[in-house]
Image 1 (cartoon, helix red, strand yellow):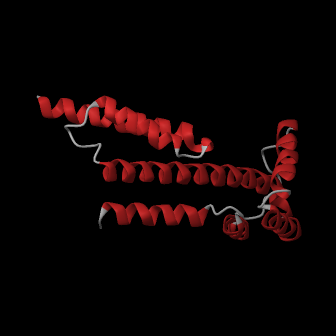
Image 2 (image 1 turned 180 degrees about the horizontal axis):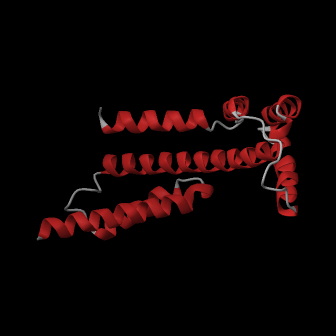
Length: 173
């Protein structure tokens, strides 16, 4: 399988697993609870830290784009899997973080791919291009980016410059 096809399928998979509403994630959690044996005495007691985390989860997730799926998930947990309420909060919090990390990583990946396309289209990557020309072009590309993505793009460009320097040093040997 070509590398780019594999990467695109991986992006599609994680985009589906941790889509912004987390509807599918919460359904998978409910499936887990259906297959777990009921536990009467959970060895782990709920602490004040756990309670505070649960309240934060309610505030952040219930009033976000995850709200409808989150409310439905907890309604079903309370109704059918009451013994797993504490674990449901733990899983909801983990899902929130999985979704955030996934969406951020997909944005970073999109920026890196776009920068790669820009570098390829510009011809700046050729071995005869001076470092000054590459830096000037990098600044030009950065100026066209949304400020929210500028720091991510700066890191990606630094990586591109570092990779280019390694290739040039390797070809000089």
